[in-house]
Image 1 (cartoon, rainbow, N blue to C red):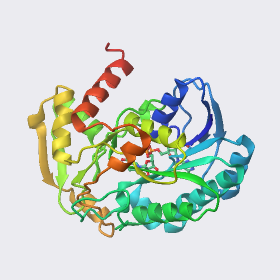
Image 2: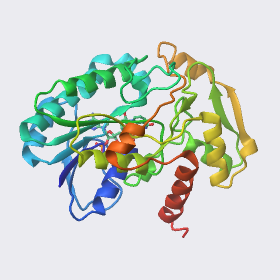
Image 3: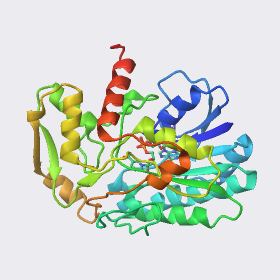
Image 4: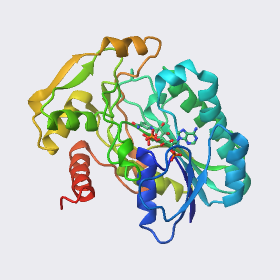
Length: 321
Ligand SMILES: NC(=O)c1ccc[n+]([C@@H]2O[C@H](COP(=O)([O-])OP(=O)(O)OC[C@H]3O[C@@H](n4cnc5c(N)ncnc54)[C@H](OP(=O)(O)O)[C@@H]3O)[C@@H](O)[C@H]2O)c1
């Protein structure tokens, strides 16, 4: 399979490339926007800004892939809120260009979407539940999903992810260590605690309190399966268990053997509250992904298994085993 991946230096994209590199039946082409990969590149790199829809089309026509996994995204919510036209161009128009060109060349198209297409107010949502986004990012992801469904003749899988944690294999220096309102708090917690510093877990209306944290390699495995699958539809590719941010922080502390008593729930930083004053955050997203697991023939990890796997990956990556 000739596989074209976007966002290859991102948390998810790097894990997809890592898995694909282990398979000798996959040829990889990675679109390249930001800093170059820090690992040795033994696959094709193609410079691309997804906001440039002509360039998107040209790139897909040039490589004629069998499948495209479109992971690239800008996840800066304050930027998106303030620069809506630019965000729309790269997210919505970029996605449409990928989808239409995939239909043109007969490539399978996997679009990486988000649990933030939901508002977090329903007790349980599944693959068939109506989306109800509450912010611009979630709205754009929802529009992308609907646009894909409207492209005639397209073979597609919409793979939704949630709360990604794990190693960025291609660019370890890009691993986020700052505090956040979402679920990307593992590196922050471990970094703070291993230095004997308090890790503040923000609470209140601007945080995504409960979600399905997903080990990047686990989500990547599901997306790769989706690329090799032939059913059209929406697939929930996230971890199997919902948990709160605070409980997740405790899991990180325990698995890395750092002092969990330094984890302190506090009201969200007023500066962050101000930055997000016009941006609503889904509060509690609890979902089922049974249909996805049945369709793709694979179950996703629960939190304990995901943590164990993360620690094993961490130790291997840092030469500790
Ligand atoms: N992180 C989460 O918790 C989470 C949760 C739900 C859904 N998701 C979805 O999962 C996907 C991957 O997220 P991630 O956490 O891996 O993101 P990430 O680490 O921020 O990586 C995103 C990558 O997108 C590429 N990119 C950014 N702007 C671009 C542009 N203008 N043109 C082309 N490429 C561009 C860059 O890769 P290159 O420089 O290599 O091109 C960048 O490294 C996204 O679609 C996101 O919406 C993530």
